[in-house]
Figure 1 (cartoon, rainbow over the protein chains, first blue to last red):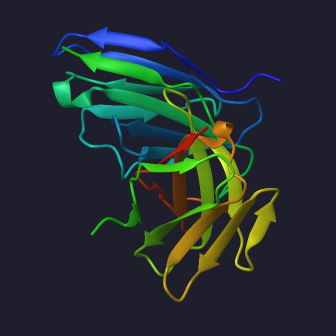
Figure 2: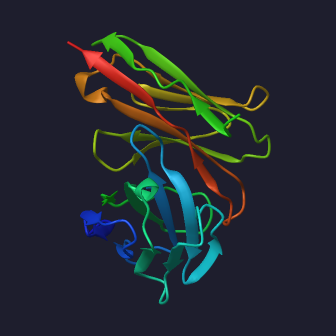
Length: 114
Length: 111
């Protein structure tokens, strides 16, 4: 079956531009996570959704970052007024149940801010 | 101190060798533990969950030491295809608990 998909796979933005990154989780998965991964580092937690509810957004680095999952399936991570330090791979993961469970990751969106 | 720490490596071992690495965590209330594998420029994939009693999956053995707050991964009879970065993951109990990844340990298996 289809796994987690993300689009675009690559995004180049000029500093100050707004970007929107999309995640299509596995159908029926309750939990959805966004992570930011810098080169040579592990994924850093950004935010967590249980269905449409955003239960934890403690990892969002600033108020320029915003995530939503309005119908409990597709999610969008939006970054406003991008900065060079936002350059990273943004990973989305979904899991079938609530709580700690196997996460299935998408291929990520590599964002480069010039 | 980071909440989850791993030796970054790289560990460079010959094919057929046994290799082990640890991951320490600082929050004694952590409840769930996992090992993920990440190949270069790919997404992480679950390798195995780590249970309190320890668990084995083929050539891989994971152990949890709550008293010393670390988890370990042992790989026996290593294969070239085991070359990857191994990420440990620590999480709390509730569904809203933040999930914390270590920075990863790079493993390179040479022929």
